[in-house]
Image 1 (spheres, helix red, strand yellow):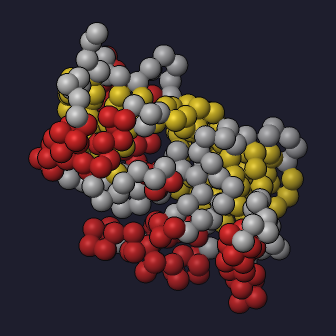
Image 2: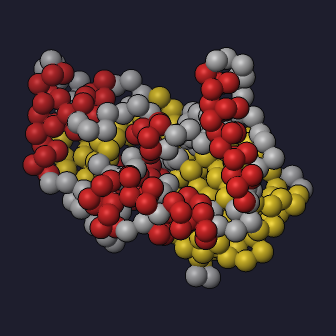
Length: 317
């Protein structure tokens, strides 16, 4: 029986290869098995965040691709693995600022060795992907996301946050930019079509479409979100002024926080400023361009976008 082939795709901007090799060696020794995998190393570049090297790794015959990097690297590799016939499973060694997918999958964040150990466990679970289609700079664009996409406060936080500060304090850098993000997020009228239905009018300053619902610090924006349930979760925020923001905070902390923990509800509850819903497909039309973010990365301004779920797109360990 041939040994399993493990390709490690790593982002050199996030760590040195020697650090990963030490974590890999520790995990290999802890695995207590004589069937060690054949291992190959593949490096991302600014021009190729992961799709091309994932293709090369598949041509090499990889059974599992370990993605060592941030959410952007994971997203790029997952895009290729979601294509028909890819066959390889995905494992993650989180090295980014947010590491949102790893957080939602309970993958160890601070230990490459512990994360590598998940890759050897061979206990995959299905992972849905959202596919977003829009137009950027006049060109049709299609990309996947594993965590969430949307516009508003989260997108403005990404734009306003200093890369230097992120490098020094990690995800806490986003807190510093929150005030500016709130000021930059105005309520706009939009049209939304759900599950290929008719467009309806809506208004808000933030719209999130999530495959996962938890952010850094254990903050759960979309408590019903499950990355393997074949559905997307939607959150539309429309708070204006102190009273509006108090209502939004009550939604997060009371209706979908304390009451949920006490078992009083098992579904996300909406308020007048925080509306929750679920869908498999969403189409959004905006009156003017808004900054869009995908898995924590700003991709540019758009006047509309469509999203559809690919259930069980990838098997992740």
